[in-house]
Image 1 (tube, rainbow, N blue to C red):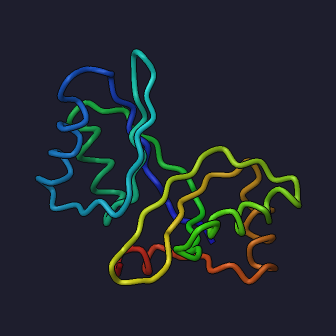
Image 2: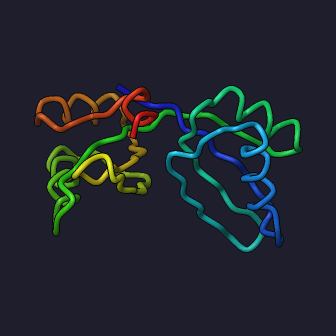
Length: 143
């Protein structure tokens, strides 16, 4: 089970991230999670939002380049080494982790981890077989 994430390519210039966030706010789109990775010339703003289609349309109308892709969202114990218990599953099966970012919510006692892996289908299968708690879009919208 995957969740759609949007990636926004942003020039590494003052005010560009704020503009992207303002674009979403004007459309009443809630950001559930975000991550930013940057280089000297551009950044990639990765977002889990309340309405992907509306977000993509709004951002593109405002001149941003947007891509949608699949990620896996997993609840892990919010305690020391909680994340490593999940990452160990991937190491054991030789599944490469491309990136991850995490957040917490006051509505759950777990940490929520967004992951992009090299082999998404295999990663999902491995997680399901290990009884990991994979979250869907509906769950993320509620927390």
